[in-house]
Amino acid sequence: MEIQTKAYGPVEIDERQTLYFSHGLLGFEEYHSYALIDSRQPPFFILQSLDEREIAFVVLSPEVFRNDFSLDLATGDLDDLEWGDDEELLVLAIVTIPRDGRPMTANLQGPLVMNRKKKLGKQVIQVGGPWKTRHNILEEMSKMGAEEC
Amino acid sequence: MLILSRKLNESIMIGDSVEISVVEIKGDQVKIGIQAPNTVKVYRKEVYSAIQEENKLAALSSIDDSLPSIQLPKTRQ
Image 1 (cartoon, rainbow over the protein chains, first blue to last red):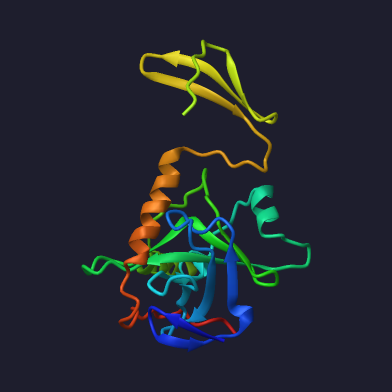
Image 2: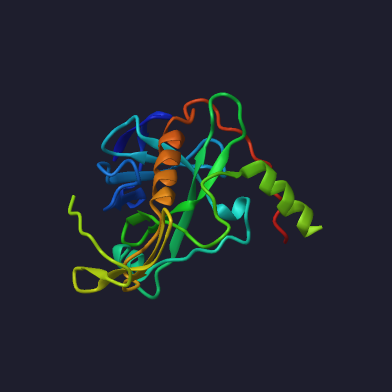
């Protein structure tokens, strides 16, 4: 199917790339249908709203900059994702790229969790850990590299 | 909005599984105890608002231009 994207105009996607967020994203509760598409600049992906072309988010796997990230899910979250034992959950962080040149950051306090098999997604809230709404991606990556040496 | 007056150690039920009680009152601070099943997530409203704000900022990111490039560490073979 062809969809309209904010980043690249019309893009052909597979139906398996679509995701339904029953609660929407925080602040965007009225938009439920999204497609996860590759960006032209890996490792970024784009979560594009299928309801409104102008709503799109750059997303990134937390593993890229924090390999110690762990997710705390409530049973309510797993129920919303209709998670079954053999199903893998995909976790992505929303990236903010300020237009004024300030460093790009990723949100690990409200990561996105997706059940690709059921095509369901949810933004989950993380409390009680070190996770913030703004992690400086490049800075954390350089720390990660240093620790590996 | 429903407004109820409660004294120290009194509580409020929300539905039949969430109980909110006043544990301590000290000056302008109130300590609140919350008992809820683990299907219900409990957090300060500031956390919720911060994520909401960040989502709005993220949606303003310039994604039509080329994204910044990230040098991925080489994966070990």
